[in-house]
Image 1 (tube, rainbow, N blue to C red):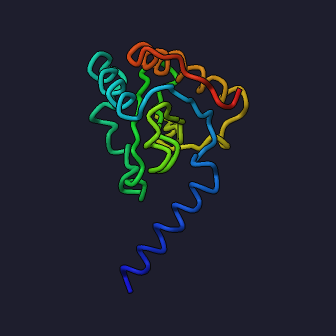
Image 2 (cartoon, rainbow, N blue to C red; image 1 turned 180 degrees about the vertical axis):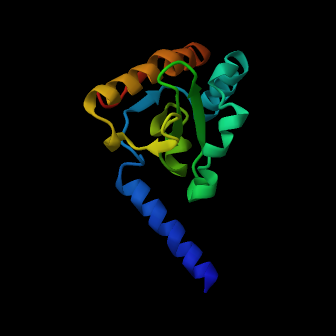
Length: 159
């Protein structure tokens, strides 16, 4: 019986995510013209070369997505120390079949943690000006570096 409830819970979470085009919060989906493995490698290189984007140990307790039932998502968290201090929960968009395509892979911000509020917020919780600021910061500080590492240009699928 417990197993059935767990399976039903997983199915409901999966349905909610896929019904929303694979995003929790609806921030822009960014397409990279490379494989998922290459983008994973680029993200790992970014963490090595720019450790400032890693969530500091004292804030790691808020990086609790796995405990919240999202451990099935392959995701990364990017920390920003300059005001406004925040971190972004970013994951791949798609399913196993999509990820087998080695010509491109999509990622998107799923949620933003506001450090002053100690709270995770979804895209719908922000006004338009804040949404633009968040997406610009992500593109300027993270996407631009990933483009360098993958030697590709990305495409914003929402523009």
